[in-house]
Image 1 (cartoon, rainbow, N blue to C red):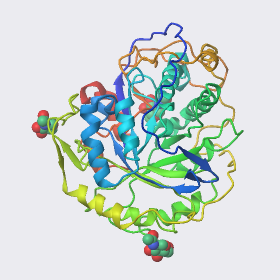
Image 2 (cartoon, protein in one colour):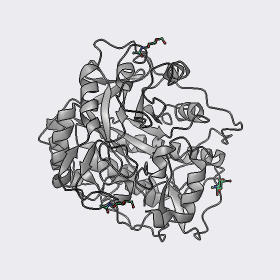
Image 3 (cartoon, rainbow, N blue to C red):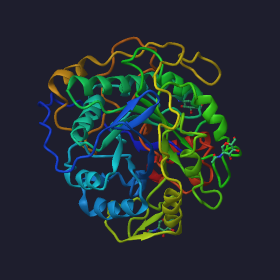
Image 4 (cartoon, rainbow, N blue to C red):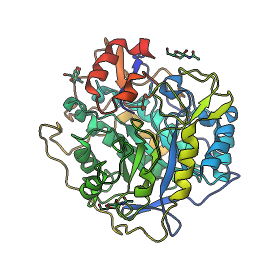
Length: 456
Ligand SMILES: *[C@@H]1O[C@H](CO)[C@@H](O)[C@H](O)[C@H]1NC(C)=O
Ligand SMILES: *[C@@H]1O[C@H](CO)[C@@H](O)[C@H](O)[C@H]1NC(C)=O
Ligand SMILES: *[C@@H]1O[C@H](CO)[C@@H](O)[C@H](O)[C@H]1NC(C)=O
């Protein structure tokens, strides 16, 4: 969410050649898959709005996959049904585990899933984007696609989360994240998977949000994202105009691809989730397709609406009793009070590319060329990614099989950084201080670089 996710750097290791992808299993429960058209999402012929919640039991620090354990997901799916959400976002999954039971139970409840394809060990390293865009990284990303592409309720994949931050030099990661976004789309097509949308989830940073949106939607159709999402905490018990959301409708009106909020839900004032009224109102529906409220479980950062007994402080055990906090009823009531509108919401029927942003004091990317996929990763398109490394694999951030092209990447890692910021994860559970300063990121990044492993 607000701050970089930090993990200890892992020793470099390159995986051996994986075997062919496992066949997609027949699934019991089935829902109509979500597609994109123009600047909107659709369920069949009906406009589809994200009316969802972010789901990360234990916060980012717990590093667990809630969809691989029925003792975790099942009680929460009951809560999701009670809330009336139609989408959950899951920040971290284990691509070496089975997800049939949780995904089927979600499908039976009519709930779709948006998945981050990265995890702390396998992600673009903000301090070494060139070096971390490598074959083991892409193998993990592609294995995550294979693990979820067979479920009808997999709505979309995030190619990255908050890799670009408010420091100018983090914009230099953009070509590598966009290359990953491109490679994911290529992989989905090459493997004959359903056309699952792929896009980026941007941090709540005013100085480069517009450029980031344009950047991910410029260039060839192969390179352009299928949608754009960003995190926004600017609505603090206010309204459409005071929050500045009216301006964010105007500035994105012409983007040309679907947009939704991947996190929203300021906690600085009393929460009444009035955001939903505007998200479902014609003020916004022509440009936005809803959003995900941050978040489900109550963690140290104080955004959650459900307590899990014994699950505090990034515990690995998220199976304890669930208790609804006061905001649970408020969120449930807001969803009920402001249903998805009928009709097409005034969406734009054609999609189009944006102009690539030019380099300036907020955007330090001067080329529109993307790095070529590392040679070693090309075989995955024909052979499949093979078994995923899971969350406990050796990690890819310091692997050596990287893109060979001279794409303007930063110098590759010396390997002497003891902590590295990964692309993945909202990292809300890292420290309580984050919750009170959602827009102040730079100092925290530096702070956590020093204390990283300790804070986790
Ligand atoms: C980006 O700039 C910050 C602040 O100047 C610095 O701490 C950080 O190491 C830089 N990152 C890279 C990848 O150069
Ligand atoms: C819609 O926009 C108008 C004009 O900006 C504003 O006055 C009104 O409060 C908005 N309503 C909602 C529900 O966003
Ligand atoms: C979690 O951490 C906070 C702050 O350090 C502490 O006050 C609280 O007692 C901890 N809770 C558990 C269950 O360990």
